[in-house]
Image 1 (spheres, rainbow, N blue to C red):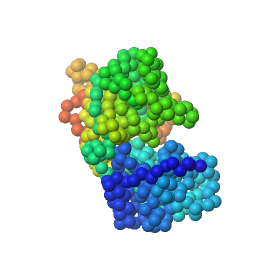
Image 2 (image 1 turned 90 degrees about the vertical axis):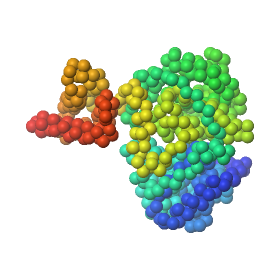
Image 3 (image 1 turned 30 degrees about the horizontal axis):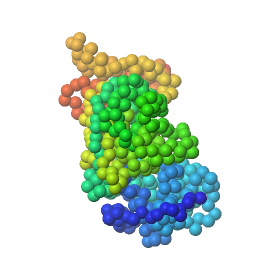
Length: 503
């Protein structure tokens, strides 16, 4: 049961009230089977806004509202806010197998996996839902729920309207995007603290890109766990943030534990926290962090969402990321405003500011929603030198299917320059690359159709390799890269057909 006695309703700011009115109006205007996406920066009060939308929707339509989250902490936080504004609600956790008293609750809050299990057992597990609100809508896990409520409305809410999976863009499921206040306007209005950014040049050679498009944990641990990077982190903290309440974001647990050890040796008050900790240990550590003025918390992948500690004075990005969403989530943890806190410090040890721009910079979110591939490509291509320092890392288990070691040994950049230096055409590097892919696939394939399946499996590797090739040549364009990939795949398919169709 949720204790709501001490939870006060948060009064809406003028911009929040205006947003609620706009969204309700948009839903009324477009009727059922219309899905709306709403963007608002971290710290702008998304929970307060969509809770008020739920209240007004129930009042106007007498239909139920379902709110989806991906963390139990977010479910509890939302439930408290709803109770505070007079909306009776029920949190559906793993213990709830059946709801006998559905009519008592106009609003339900559920974690996506739990609800999906219940709906697959009984599609009427929650019925008469007119509006589904999706918190942190950029996560793709929510899509599986949409089929059960396709006759109503869906409202997705996120700070960054970019899908966590580039192959499944948000505009597949949402008809329109409404963009809320920008970070700079929230700062000017006194709703968010401003970030003072400090960047340190770091050598990211050795990082590898995984199948999700971001740098892998293993390669990040190798880069950030070494002595020199630990010393750089300590130097940056002592130069900029000593004595500040500081939150450090790391990519891997090994790095975070090393950070804790390094800072402890210097006598600084620091704790480590990751997703393997029990609820009790997590609460104890966060309580210590809240109550200790100069506390340092070294974390891994657990405090990017659903964590609200306004007293944080410094954010340290002790990692590199290629995810704009994660970049904004991490920095946003320091942006909460207090009467004596109009600024916070950002220390970047991952070339992230250079990759994405300042946190406060204007971003065309409508462009991101309509053309996500183009939008992301334009952000990441600004840092061409980093592309050469990053290697592709195959998904776990792929080495059991084919000889990935032979693919890893082939470096198209090196082969290109060998061709040019010996007086041959640089384009020969592409032919040699295709031969490399061909040999590995043929050895692993049982027949032509199996070979096509293997081609699909390594498609990201093909594109990654050809992108490196286009960086070597002058006057390369996105259209040329697209043409190159299509031609490469067509010719590779033909080579495989010529050999395997006869068998």
